[in-house]
Image (cartoon, rainbow, N blue to C red; front, top):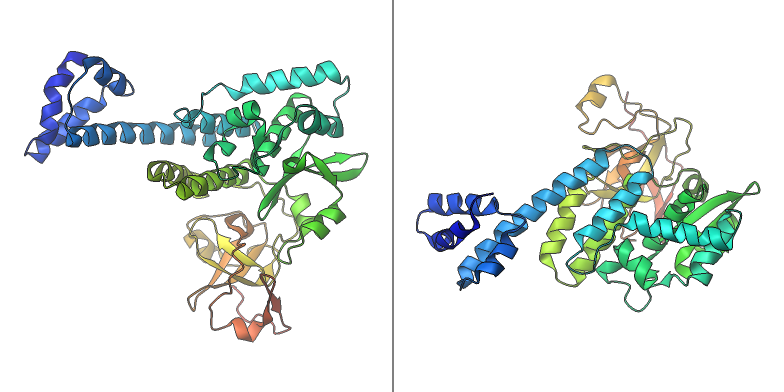
Length: 391
């Protein structure tokens, strides 16, 4: 790093008439990051509003680039669900200006050790009672939109969070005890599940770990567009969870008008898209997650639409498939979609789609030909055969 005393001579040149000079100075000052703010404080300079703004931009750009590089390393790393811990630790560290950061791994280790002291045998039900009754972790009902509810340091210490952060806590502690607990990715809610004695038990971590059977889950969270059997067979991947955490965070910052944090989170979301990283390892035998009439949204291109037909795998020819920029696995369900506010029909892989819970109808000229009506956020498919098949 260059001599920090040079900074006081550089600062006035941030307002130089020449753009070339200003660019050179910004580049030179960036070399002092991440210590620039501390150095400026020690120098005690009297900064003009324009100089303060330019220095803020330099530090923000450095932070964005550093976060981007760290995020991409995490998403590219191996280690299965261990990366979930890395993702959540990253988010806690990213919010260090809002809440003190501590490595979450150490805190999770301590919780697991405390559980072992009170329970000799690892058991999902006992762990749920330990966390949500004995330890008192609960849903953040009073400040649900607080961005810190996505920060696992905050959740662990304040003992409250949103469904996905509490479920992630449950999952990560369970892994330390040798238990297998997975997520259940519902529209508007996030739960946990575990196989116990040959049966599947659902845990609602936001509601004190309340237990449900699959039948009770389907009855309580009935959504016509969701196939609950497929939902339970195909738990969310790391990428699914990471994107949902980021979207929660993005919405929370947006509601608070924190534009800089919104931009940071949107940048991370962009790096989480499927063209850069595989979203899901697909089981060729898996059943279609979506049904005809389901509203969906493409997780790369962001268009929404209604599913009109389903293929068990990609039926397109090799030339069409190679032209597809995302190259998702062919051996998974593929869907024919009527795209909202257009005359277009698309063909997309299951791994590139997510449920659209907007409950808004789709504006497409073919909707009346293939659907009887629209009820409870889902179209009712008629018996008209879908005539457009890729061959």
